[in-house]
Image (cartoon, helix red, strand yellow):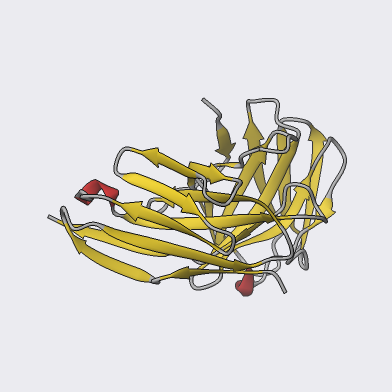
Length: 112
Length: 113
């Protein structure tokens, strides 16, 4: 069964303390990895998409990387406004073209 | 900017009521999706549509139906609401391209009493 696992479930950082979030999967074929940010009471906001092992993308303090079996979201010198839930999702090969399989998210809290 | 608009942010309904959740997108996207999001379970796909009047079941379609009469509008229908359908409902849309991205609305928090 296709499955996406995110770790840790929750992470508390001090402002400026860098860390990484993990997203691993057991999916029958990979056709893309997506990272979203979700603020409380709001819908997910798209951050990055990665398609090939070794691919990296950056946006401000966030950097997403992809290997054959997992993806990391690196947060460098975070600020309190980076506090949110970060979701990853894999699109698998076959079946519905646009179906995404989501992890349950990592709740990040950055304290000043 | 892509805009996906869900008609209600909060809804409170009674058990057995018929409930309509509406979603409109303004980017001419072919694909539209309905998810529900529950603590510890993540986002789960209820139904999706890849064209007008076309629909496919997602992972948890039981108790739900959908309607897509126009390209920009996708409705989720709870025929007879039950308490276990209390949840956050999220609508999304995307282009029908290999590297498409799903864009989400703000969500509707539904409480069934």
